[in-house]
Amino acid sequence: MAIRDSLQQIRTHWMERISCELAHGEGVRSGFMEQLERFYDLLEQTIISGDTAWLDPILYDWGHSPTETDLDEGGYEVSFVINRMITLTIEVIRETLNEKDALELIAAVIPIFTHSLSVVVRYEMETRVAHISNELNKTQDKLQQLDRHKSNFISVAAHELKTPLTLIEGYTTMMADMVEQSGQPAIDSMLKGVNTGILRLSQIIDDMIDVSLIDNHLLTLHFQPIWIGHLLNLLDNELKKDVANRKQTLVIHEFDGNDLMIYGDTERLYQALNNIATNAIKYTPDGGTITIDGRLLPGFIEITISDTGIGISADNQALIFEKFGQLGNSNLHTSGKTKFKGGGPGLGLSIARGIIEAHGGTIWVESEGYDEVKLKGSTFHILFPTRTEATDPIITKFFGTFEHAKQELETPLPIRDGLSQNSPETP
Image (cartoon, rainbow, N blue to C red; front, side, top):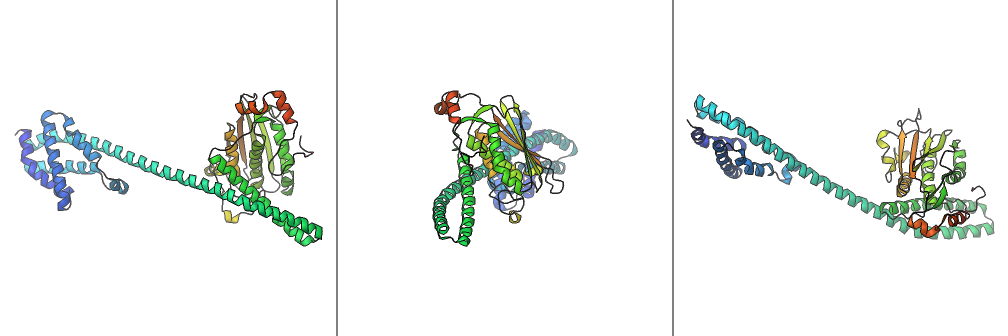
């Protein structure tokens, strides 16, 4: 018997067997039967012509047919249907035809079904990949929107808190003056405590504003000639009290490049170094050592800030540079900027990274892991370019020539966090 005749002979039995096995419910079976009729017609054309391209249109439709619900639930697979169709087709052929005709027809249809299965699997994979990519894009858009809302909240909250805090600070200062004149030491002591809280809150609000500026790419840098050694001397003077209170040792080495004049934002670079060094003090037990060193590289200066502290696990070494990137249980933290494992908003390292990257540099941390017993410590690497010429339009606008820059340097530079401009310890 010819293969075409064999196909016609098994057609009705094949349709009934496939529809009963794979389609449940009259409504579903009716639509499925139409698809089976179309598939069988194309199958005959493929066998007669020997060209599998006849099946491509229906295979494309089937491979791209899963709905969003099907893809989300992961329960709809056309490849399973075709795979099952292969088994049922062989059963129908054996039940309907004699052995010779059955073997002849099976040999003709199995390669076509195998080809169809591989095509559908490819189409299904494309559909699922496209669906997953779309879902990832949606999730990314939502995360970006959430991050924008968070940044907007930080910005608004910081600015809204700034005004009443300024009023409180002003009235507290006037009250302190009145108490000093009236000679009431008890009240004066309480007002000093209030003022300490105001200063701490003011620092937190300033950090929130800085994070908002960095997130929105609004951080303005005022480039001017600086020496790294000058910044490190200021840092040494600023941290002496905190290091002494913790019975720690701060070691600052001289290195190639610390006496090189470069261009950068002095106040912001100092802020970044201060945040990193303060973090090292905070996570180093009493009696530990913080070491600042560096080296000159082609086109860059690298500064390292190492500590003998509790270290950072590999999983958290990227997290600490994110906003509010606190580690551990915040309920167990003590307050204070430099107390051991002291709490805080978790903005210092995020701000430091933003400032360094705004200078065209980068920052990363190395640590063998977290261990409060063995104290494996951490090393922060800060890398930023050595701008040794006033080629930046902003620099040229403000300073023009090196001689003008030298005159500007004769005026002490303003530094954040309460450093006096006329401090006798300032180099």
